[in-house]
Length: 256
Ligand SMILES: Cc1cc2nc3c(=O)[nH]c(=O)nc-3n(C[C@H](O)[C@H](O)[C@H](O)COP(=O)(O)OP(=O)(O)OC[C@H]3O[C@@H](n4cnc5c(N)ncnc54)[C@H](O)[C@@H]3O)c2cc1C
Image (tube, rainbow, N blue to C red; front, side, top):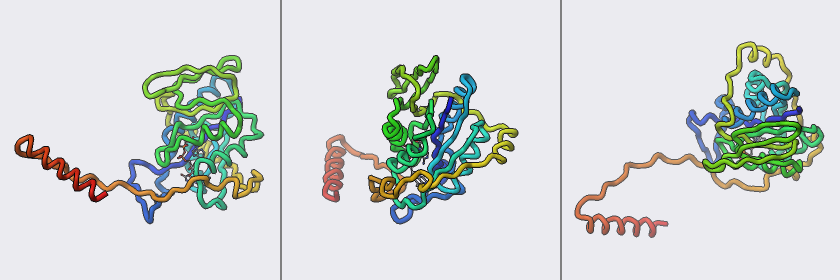
């Protein structure tokens, strides 16, 4: 089976995230693999173990994303690909899906696995947009996947409920928490990954024009939330508390 995993580097949500001049500042030293993509890689390795084949991990990003690609290789992926397109100034889910679609168009993938969403921009659009562009079946937020004789059965998590879908291969699925238990890379895996070559692909290699890839959406402002102030406890008789509350709400409405 030809299995491809979509991987995104994101900032580490355990770290302090900063926004300057309306944009989140990405510190490449503190990037991690998007947590949902760990489930995607693990599932790819599980399916490879059952059905054979190769696992290729693909990311659209910058030089720094190679660190997360190496982690994927250390987990057991066979190949890693970095799609770079520094020419593109404004990027969004459309840009990423278009680059991935151009790369995957002739790869004859049997199974493409992405994460359900990212922990930074979190649109959850890259997987579905990519499936549309490639004309593939798709199932999002899966928590189980079984392949038998070219047919795939997935269980989707739908806000706590479950829906089972059956489809032919090829298919694109996105991984939800609970799909599996991702394993840490082993020491031999890490050593092996260091020697592997990461393939680099450019806009020219994909024969894509900048205008086709440019973002279709515009982000006007990104900001971090200011810590909440202490709550105020109303005191006195109930009628007085209600009067105070109505007054405050009235003042707040006037300010807006
Ligand atoms: C030229 C270019 C350069 C970029 N450089 C960076 C960068 O340096 N750092 C960075 O964090 N982002 C980078 N991006 C990514 C881009 O910002 C996001 O992919 C896009 O905005 C959608 O993000 P999302 O978080 O909403 O994805 P979602 O739709 O929420 O992601 C869902 C899933 O889609 C897949 N996916 C999402 N983004 C990517 C990706 N970039 N590559 C492969 N699979 C992906 C993953 O499996 C992910 O779990 C770049 C994109 C382009 C086109």
